[in-house]
Image (cartoon, rainbow, N blue to C red):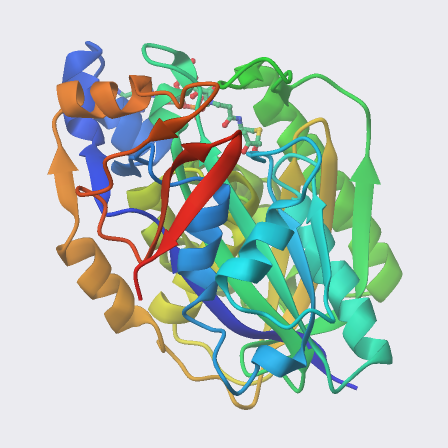
Length: 386
Ligand code: CAA
């Protein structure tokens, strides 16, 4: 049976920062950000959006009357949870009016959570082929003003439906994973911003990628020649380039050219949004789908990395029903209608924090369908403007 990603939608707010402006404000060479880091713009997340509303704004694009009753589980990957007890998935279930006969769970392992969801969903659909699973990756990446990580912030959500006979990517059964308890990036419960050992985190990312790539090849007998493209977790797009370069010498010159072209296609959206932690690999996959020329049966490799750390290499083939560039117009419209913030405006948004207790927020600047309108009796209040 063929199981995989049937639909893949994305959402992030319409406010963004141009990283050339940030470079000037931080006294850095803009080429360090644009080329050295590989980022040109960054989504700025207002206080009226959290992991739940970002997810609802993404998932509402792919949940409709046709598939609502078929959804059996919501697996919500995030490291930006809003509650230590309730899962973000159960809030999302209500906002999307999903039926009550549903499993709702939040999954956490840094940026790896959505990949765990994808694999658990795959196994569930294998046993229940008439059902669908909604998998979410939703986060807000925050390092702090004037930190080395600032240029790698961002945020947003991806939503995927996992089904039998999927229209986008058919997942292969084989995958390779690797887990070690290390401190490259973490966020203690009392902090809003991540702590990170930057260069170490980059080295661990590459070490994990090499380990799972080798394991995968041993399991499957496949080599780099079997792949048309690789999509990487992209905390910043140069990171994926470093990953690709680590294995590129294994390919012929012609294959190298194709893989590099497709890598450029896979980082086009991420360059302009920044890190969305759990969703980054899947935004990159969306970018690849929309901006590369892909054909039925071609194999794509995916490297998922979550600090702390978990790495997984998985793969899939392009579905016979693949609708090439299906969301390209959506993204063109989205990027064209964004509002650019000055560095001062971005800093003001960044510093705006939710109070610990009750508050009513001004949502007039946020035109999303789902917004956080405040906190009442320690309970988040959401608004659906549809
Ligand atoms: N023109 C072109 N390139 C330039 C340049 C210029 N004028 N000036 C500098 N560069 C290059 C540097 O040579 C360097 O390239 P290499 O990485 O290829 O050596 C690159 O720009 C970055 O320069 P620095 O290393 O000096 O940058 P930095 O010390 O300011 O920090 C960082 C970079 C460590 C990535 C930092 O932004 C950071 O800590 N980010 C957050 C952590 C992170 O994303 N880690 C990734 C792995 S962990 C993960 O994947 C999970 C997750 O989502 C967080």
